[in-house]
Image 1 (tube, rainbow, N blue to C red):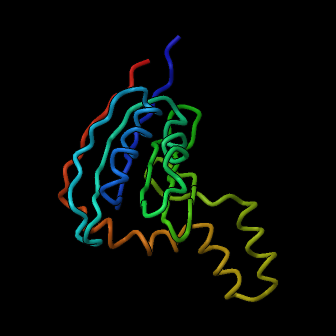
Image 2 (cartoon, helix red, strand yellow):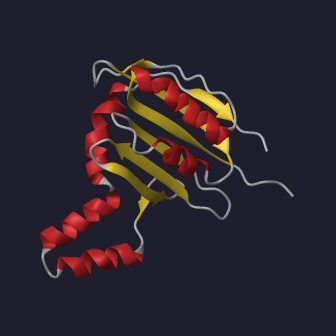
Image 3 (cartoon, rainbow, N blue to C red):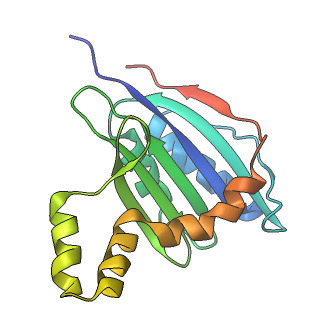
Length: 167
């Protein structure tokens, strides 16, 4: 019986020099392989570095990568995991100020907000459109997108390295 596989990308948007080897060790512990990322200066945050890693692995690898990196001071990152057979995709975003955000994604990378989350937004809004808007904004991770956007644009044209997990 074959094992389901998926793929995704880890974007380390900013990390101080001293943290870079620790990020590589954390990734290596998840993918069970030594990882040497190509670190480049992050123009959006002088003194910080950025790297990208495309990965292939079993479903849940994205969550493991995000868990291994979350909570580190001064680290901004995103992990994506494409949907696979019977498993939704996901996106994890992390900033030092906001912590971690997770969303389920469809085959196109769109965030999928559940019926229960939408109901919660309506109920907690209690007729106040601004409160409903606020709850939906949280469900979509807009604060994380706003904070990470300058780092994403600074990375355009940066090199990407592929990492394949076997088994």
